[in-house]
Amino acid sequence: MTVAARPHVPRPSEEPHGGPRRLVGPLAALDGRLPGVHDLLLMQCPSSLRPLGGGALPDWARQVLRAHPWVTVGRAPAVAGSPVETPYPVRCTRDVSAAPETWLPVTVRGAERGQRLDALAPRAAVARTLRPEQLPGRAALLPAGRVASIPALAVLAPAGQLIADHRLAWGPIGAIGYELATGEPVAGPLSPLRLVLRAPQPVSRRDALHLRRALSRLRVPVQAELETRHGAVLLAEYAASPLSLTLLTPYGPREVHDPWFPRGR
Image 1 (cartoon, rainbow, N blue to C red):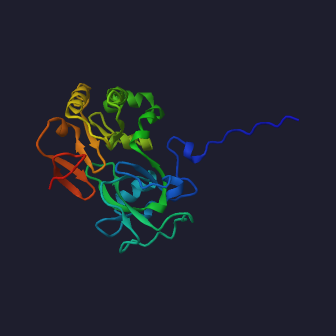
Image 2 (tube, helix red, strand yellow):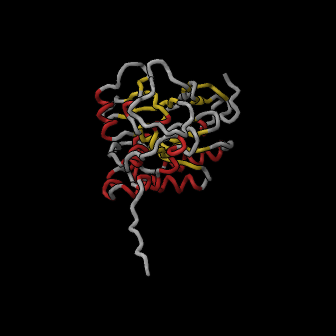
Image 3 (spheres, rainbow, N blue to C red):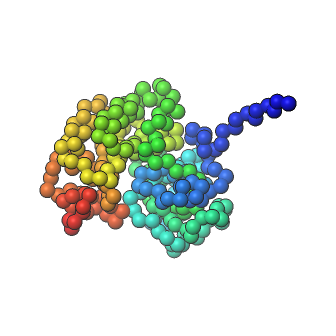
């Protein structure tokens, strides 16, 4: 007797811009690792976020998180334990396999200019995570007309081809990255293309200069940063070969001579 095949039912993780998974926690959503700067997190319990400045979430942030509970990981240290005035959200179902609570630095992005909120998010409430490297392929999930109308989206593939010549892992960040992750049309016709280039090993000044010149020929402004093991430095600044560079770290900017071996002040 032939048994009929069961129809394939997409799991939540297969949905292009789907909602939170039923099981949450670092093992389910983060593959056991802490998220890095620029990662996008889908929150199971958006109300569990705690503004860094204290107090309650502003109304605009509540509205944004209710519609699209995505936040961006910021460049700041994670906080272990239970910070003052940040009790564990009782409305969240905690994964029993989760480690002791870790609070992640995140930013909530609003629709209006200036609507940015720095907050702490409980790691156990993370339902899904997307790294910048996972986002370029998601352009196919957007309407073709949308990609054509936003120059920064239209040049994403050509930018990737230029970066591929230098064998660097990369991904979009900022408004373009947020739109690719969430499907929410937040980018505009004048939005720049912001990129993070993973550079755990040193990149020569010559290669950086060639890449910067190639990216500058695209029809939109490109703002790229080299992410080293110690922090990030702007590609344009590094390619210009100054004696000192500004290295962006979780503990603030540092003036260094070499972003891969930061021995500056």
